[in-house]
Structure formats: structure tokens, C-alpha cells
Length: 167
View 1 (cartoon, rainbow, N blue to C red):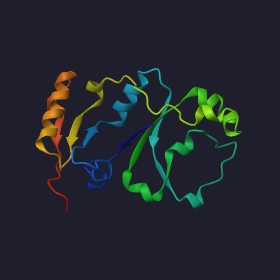
View 2: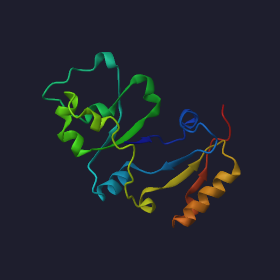
View 3: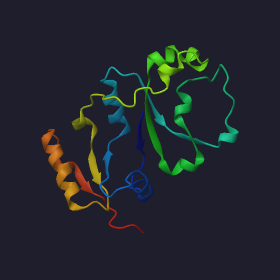
């Protein structure tokens, strides 16, 4: 799973929630670029905006609207401020064995699915900008630019946050 924040502007709430230290960065791209880069991989994925729901009013699942991926794109209304786009990578082995997994057979095999996986993406095509937290010390910019140079990316992608202080 890979999560992104959709917004035209920086969000103080997102910096505070997801950059618990002052050294945070945020990558800027477009949904189109993200989708195009993922299509170049051998991965099966679903990409979509999170639907924020009142969990007490969700329509019942029927054979007509059943999708194993669908619940991955729901969150309760309390998280609506996140404006999230999510990429879910589909593990065919788990999908093929979903019935036996939920019946309790072979459950040990699925208790800890891949905690992460590396997916080759061309960052030069993906990244439009790298925003540095408004509270980041100067050394963060130096380190980020150094890493960009090391991996063949343009250090000019780095932008200090437009937010100069928390209000």
C-alpha cells in the first residue's frame, strides 16, 4: 500500500501528523505520472481516491458489488482531512487463497504479509518537487540535495515549505 495526499497547497495538519520530527519531506507529483510509472512495472495494482464514509451507513456487500479491493479505499469520515489517494498492490497468492484464509485454514501463512516491497520506479519521471518541512533545520536541505545528486536527480526539485510558521 502506498498513500498520497491530494491538495493544491501544503497542509499544516499533514505536516504535523506525518512528520513527527522536523526533518520531514513531501514528494509532489500528479496522479497521471504515478499511474504511468506504475503501469511500467510487473505489479498488479489499484489506484483510487479514498472514500470517506459513515461506517454506520455503508450499504451491505452483495455479490453484485463485492470487490476484495474495495474496502481498502474506504476510511471513516474522521480522516477526511487527509484527502488521500491510495495505491494498493494486489498479491495474487492471497487473492487466490482468500476463501481458505478466511475459513481459518492456512491462516499462519497470511498473518504477516509482505511488510513492504521495492518497486522500480523512474523518479525522474515521477517527482515534480520535493517539499521540505517548514520546521526542518538547514541540514535537511543539504542532505536531500546531496542524495538527489547521488542518484542522478536534479537538486532544483527541492523547495522549502511555503509555510514559515505554524499558526
